[in-house]
Picture (cartoon, rainbow, N blue to C red):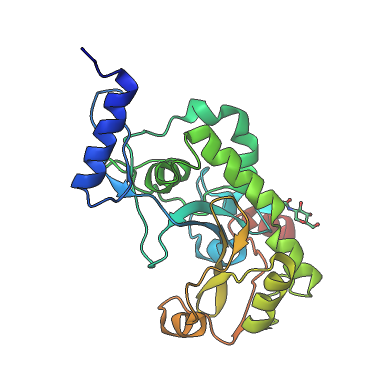
Length: 272
Ligand SMILES: *[C@@H]1O[C@H](CO)[C@@H](O)[C@H](O)[C@H]1NC(C)=O
């Protein structure tokens, strides 16, 4: 009598799952408690989201230890990481794909690099995938990182991979070499910024602005981390015009101003 080996059974199960789900490949991960994560189709590409501290830090009204804007002269002056987001080509994205809770211990060896290059730029605690609030990193891993399977398979790899991509594609360097340096008086042509990135990385970025200031910049990558255009199809211009966070034709790249938050010392010095 032929008996089915375990691998054959597993394969059969997958075939059944694939048939049931209309042949869409599903990401399934069994967590420690035996539960199964929500199911999502595998993502199409990665989006590296970068934050411009000069724009974010203008919003800081009170300080807290988690907000890198509050580091005074050590506050970030380059684009910092927001997250590495798995996206679909249709403009939607998967979120909260497995029940893998963020564990600070897993990234302890990356901690100083993350503090520097992937800091929170606000005092708020973002939500995790389980109705609780947590660290900025917890939010990014649980909401986005868990959906980067099978390219990235665990929390440590997610943060390390993101740092490596960030180091390889230095947007701040490209912009400053093209003359786009932080300034609280200059405005720069959006098209010039986009062209500088295109020339350097051979792919088109996307930008989001707030009140005419660059707030975020996105670089997009195929699953093998080769750069690709962020916009799908030929309507990049249209999307940016229609988008709520669209940038005007001329944008600013505000320099970080410590906005009186650590100005107490300064005032007492001047009073003396
Ligand atoms: C980006 O390039 C600038 C200028 O060369 C350099 O100072 C900075 O350390 C680089 N940033 C990263 C994250 O490598």
